[in-house]
Image 1 (cartoon, one colour):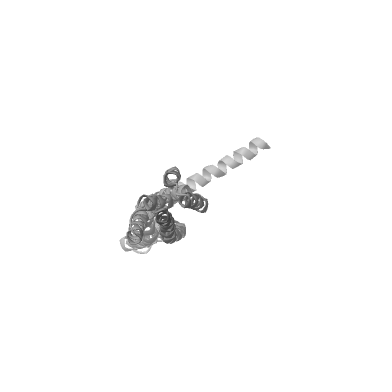
Image 2 (cartoon, rainbow, N blue to C red; image 1 turned 120 degrees about the vertical axis):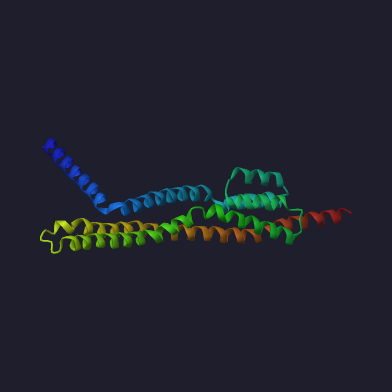
Amino acid sequence: YQIKACQVCFMLLHQQGVFMFDFIILGGPILWVIMALSVVACAIIIERFLYLRRISGDENKLFVRIKASLLEGHYNEALSICDQNLSPFSTLLKIGIENRHQSEDVQRDILKDAAALEAPALEKGLSALGTISTISPLLGLLGTVTGTMSAFGVLGKFGAVSDPAALASGVSEALITTVGGLVVAVPVVIFYNYFVSRVNGILTVLESRVNTLVVLINARNGITEKSGSEGL
């Protein structure tokens, strides 16, 4: 029984593989383009997931450690903590600490520029992902048009066709490319919106951290200046 079951499973998998191969062949060249775009989209999605996972450490704990070091005046320790945590947030903190001797307005401008420079790295690949989500259904529509033209071309060449199989190739291309374009576009749109939401959230947090960091650094500078005045 086990041998028969294995044979049945093998036959079903073989038939399914043949069906998928025929499905791809009937889709024509436009389906190959859609499939290539799907591979590119998958690569971008995986890369963005890994990148966001790498930089999404516990930022609250990091900020608490940096804050404690700054309040104690241990700037080198704070810089060392930033070097140990590679993320847009730690980069921003490091730049703020390195420019702590600047005026408050200058600090704020520097940190805002630094936060803006982190945006391209966060948004890497998203424009390509958005483009794929847009053109995939359009390519499916193009396949529909070319498939329909092929089917009507057969009718125009032979007139009345008694065998429906003569029209099968064009009709199959029309339907398969439409399905392929939608199958690629729907999940890509979902992932694109997810990544855009994540990036906007990170940029918002960075912007709020800019104000908090400026206040924190200047509060420490104020304490230092006050201590120096009292010593005099």
